[in-house]
Image (cartoon, rainbow, N blue to C red; front, side, top):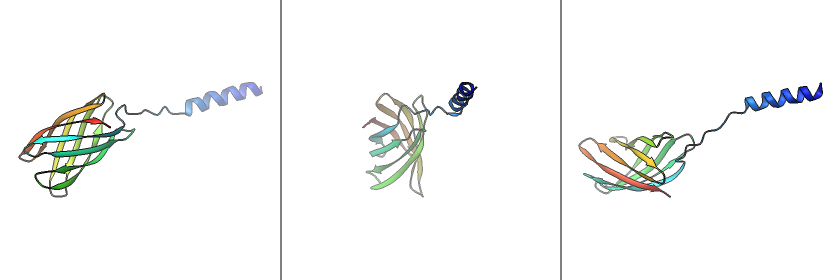
Length: 116
């Protein structure tokens, strides 16, 4: 009887444990962007795919925040900007490299980078 109770306890304990998924792109990434503006960017991808970081615009001579998400397939959707001006970073992370397009009003261009 005791062995049966222990078995049932272990069975239910195992069912209660939830598998934690880790985003394959977790870590620090950085790179540059170019086009009608140019500069640098640096972000962190968390285990759940949340993207947070900063960038620097050489044209505006200003820092800006970057926030978004990357899914397990590497598709990135992020917003960037200051309180008065916001734009989009869209692209793909693959292995340890990343690239895509950015836009902000009449400004636009490409970006690229890699995992550090």
